[in-house]
Amino acid sequence: MSTCVLYVDESGDVRQHDVPLKNGQTPIFTLTGLVLPLKEWRNIDREFLALKRTFFAPELTNSKKRAEHYEIKGNTLTSPRNKDSRRRHVFLNKICQLASSFNGKLFCVTIVKSPEEPTNATSIYTSSLQYLIERFNIFISEHESYDKGIIIADSTKQFDNDVAKSHMSFIFGTESGRSLNHIYEAPLFADSRLTAGLQMVDMLSSIIYTNHYHWYCRSVPSATNYEHMKKYWEIIKALEFKSIRKYDGYQKFGFRTIDHNR
Image 1 (tube, one colour):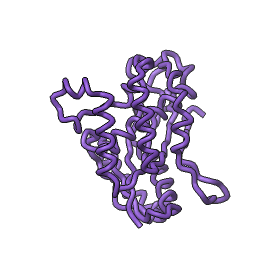
Image 2 (tube, helix red, strand yellow):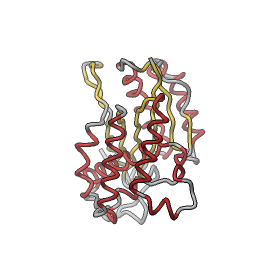
Image 3 (cartoon, one colour):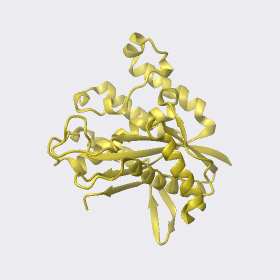
């Protein structure tokens, strides 16, 4: 038996938004987790680096950073301004294939935010993380190769400490939290520029975010048009976790959407 890692990153914004949307505001927030085998981290890192060098050679050549530290952001790859960039879209497909080749599984929570009754920003993140962790624990309990998991999250900087404290309170202070015995410690926060797994989940999260944005928020005044990202949905759904067993009579799935406007 071995250990797996849940790499966690967010897309969108937990802060309040206006309607019509003002520049930079987002009506939804997506927290995504990608599970990968810890023992394969070196191979994943090198294969990911090879893809960056293949598809972004000009940018790497002109950058003062080492190739390992050059970060390609998911929101740039999925942006409408790059919808016709074949290079970027082939790269995105390759990232999906890389995750699949290491038997990666995806989990996500998307919050459709209410502009009239905004939820506390930290609470949006912490409650979303709890959902991911519960599903992550189920994944490990059903997996024939894994017995434990750790969580590595992209540093939010503004509330890492609050998130870690909330996690520990959930684990030790609630009945459901105490039952999650396959997960080690509190989330570890890392700089995504140093971690291939976080860079990969950033890109996959952007795919989920743009599809959910298009489905739930395309009618919001001043919304961004992400119709060009619909073609990725079948690919991304193939990576979604689906439980083998039923729990309280229901199969568990990795993706969940919560609409605060209802």
